[in-house]
Image (cartoon, helix red, strand yellow):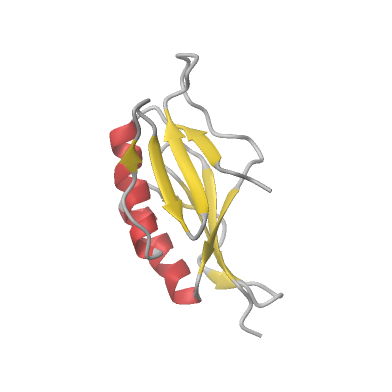
Length: 124
């Protein structure tokens, strides 16, 4: 359904440190800057783009919005969470944990306040 997710950042260098670390924890690659100055991450067929807002106004986090990132295993979820918390993110909600449906999830806010979750498929 989606071709990509685009989020805003007020500091692309800070965002790159955070997203490079979290994508590396999932087995992904560092982000690349395109000709328009946007960070682009590709992994498992999906694409996340990080940019300064084109209208020149400050980037703000979506109130009520969450971006979900697929992970292969609970260990990947834990590694993603640790990498994010170590590289400028903020741990939110509960610690990484299994949900009643068997999926394993963790939540972070990136340095700009965007809410993210990593989730592995149920093991049951």
